[in-house]
Amino acid sequence: MKKNIFLYLFIFSLLINVFTYMYFTNKMKFESTRIENLEIKTNSLKDSLKMESDKLYDANYFTLEQNNNAQEYFAGMDIEKIQIAVRDAIYSGNAKAGGNPLINYPQIEGRPFTINSYKILNNRWVIVDFSNGKVYGESILKYFVEDDGSITFETAESLLHANTFN
Image 1 (tube, rainbow, N blue to C red):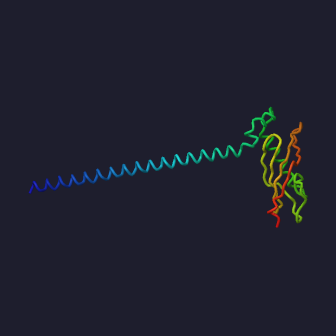
Image 2 (cartoon, helix red, strand yellow):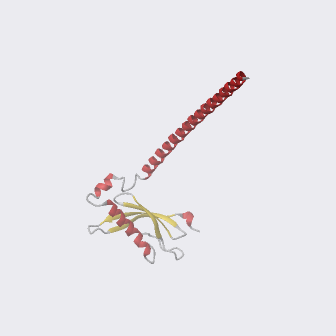
Image 3 (tube, one colour):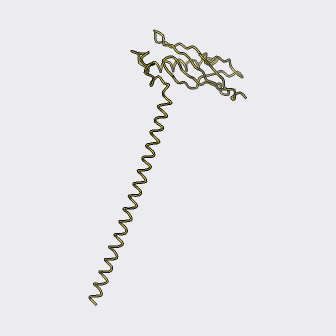
């Protein structure tokens, strides 16, 4: 009887050890495959981030911040202040009753044109997007920083998108 109890205890402990071994072995395999999958996802996300970063760099190639020659043109001047002055000068025209004077188009259906957004391309050009709420267009402006710090503009070219006329 005593031998049977020890035999049963031995078999029981052997089974518990086998089940414990199998459990931890499978757990390790599961964790290792999970880690591998996460590493693959991480590498994929790093590649995607690099691609998007490259796209952003390419998209910002034509900006005052990226253009060293344009920055040298403004040597000794604070480029950030120039950008703020250009922005303020562009948007200040939107407050005028007949619309922004930088837009070379008259009011359409009694609605004046205002500038919605802009991008400073270099030390001479700004591209703007404008609309009157129904008709949209774009324009290239030349800007000049005067000796007194004021900003003056010339409209180089403008276009209205024909598909926005209703």
